[in-house]
Image (cartoon, rainbow, N blue to C red):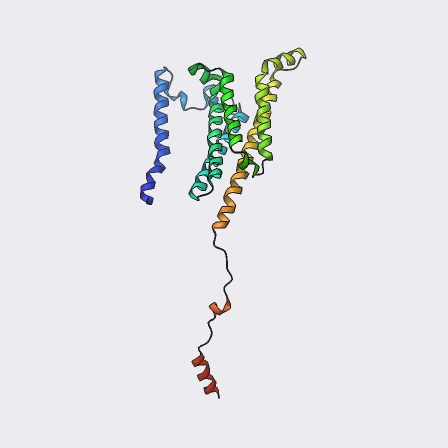
Length: 248
């Protein structure tokens, strides 16, 4: 396929963004809300300080960056004809992370899925957990081939956050019974989540660099020492003999 045939593909994302903007405006107008409400910052709409929820916002950015890195790595490895298992590993990580950031940022399992699909929150969380376990099960060999300590730490921290969220009512009651501020229970849940996202991002940055950099080095042509006979050809025998005779 020629380069000119591939060029229209780069317009897919801007066109998709335009279609999404039109869809959002249509839904907002249909709900009877101001047209600009979906485009303005949440802190500006709610008249809150811009730093409100800053850790949560940065966590969503790290999720999105992880998905982008994994997707780009999978594309580069596919074009370089890398092993399919390696390509599938990063592609699956990109899909899983993209869903997690969508779920986290738009509160799918907390609000949207129960409200519009009638799905219980625990079932929505169970789907994410099942997807994560499926990813680990199918990519176990690829994970073991990397420096996986950050991955294990990320999974442990994120699982801790989910467990704290699962038993939040019991923890709130315990905090009230001991005269503690229940707000600290939220910190106990969100701090492991933030650290887990950071470890997830760091792991996939390291894994992507390990997958791409050696391949780039291998694509370079090795520097082979050239024999001096090739650089400096032997003198012509006739010229050498004639020179000797002339000198004589």
